[in-house]
Length: 354
Image (cartoon, rainbow, N blue to C red):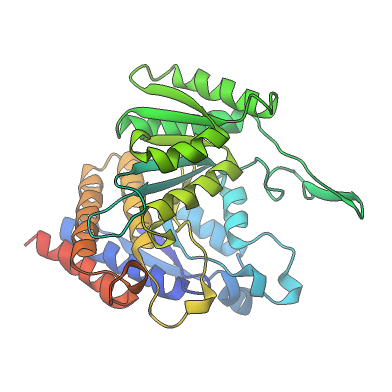
């Protein structure tokens, strides 16, 4: 197995190596044979290749087994590179990464805003209200006149079917419950189609408990009774908003791990951004990146039918949980820095196998 390492911008060059360090430890402990290759995106990509996400990067992700993908700070890219899709968008569209899976769970030792929660937001990743994702050419946000701005939303049967199936498959490995989020009572065509397709796909999984929840009601329920949800299937913008809310309820965006995946490709990428205000100070929390790497191991285990990758993912998850009890980064009330936290998790992985 070979993984591509893409540090990205801001805190990326700190948290991506932290995730890599943990993957190296778990590979050694479980004889996974993972190796790494480094490429560059973001500002470093512009400097070296003239592009924030070059064709070479896309090709190598396709050729290798996965990628650790750092955050990007496209707001601060040179003016000549403004207006282009950011690296995430380029990779997502080029590789058809339709599923953005974002877990949030309360963890012992981590101050949280709710007593108990363990959910995964299954976020559709290719269309919806975001204007960069729903047109073959050009944007879907425009102004008819100086006083009127408009945006087009796409909900397609095929894209909805993809994320619904991904969510159902995830739920089958968890507590076997899905919640379909929509506003079909108002947006009868777009969310109506979304609801119809999700319910239809769920029929292929008779073991699942299936519920549908109106969008605004879910905003209240996730705060009041988050422990009742398992896998929550959302269209793009809804999932983006609710996954940040869920991360904050669980303790903060520093816990916001995720993968972006298709049936063939998976990248580990945090749900949070590049945090340029704390970049270079070694105080970033690498937990989200470690969680993302754990999720990628689980995805690789399923794709390649490699049980030891699943065992390794569980080992890394256990080491992370233990370290969050023993010591945390400053954003979670501790005094550890990015490097020392990752080193402690890696050490726990290795010690667990001795």
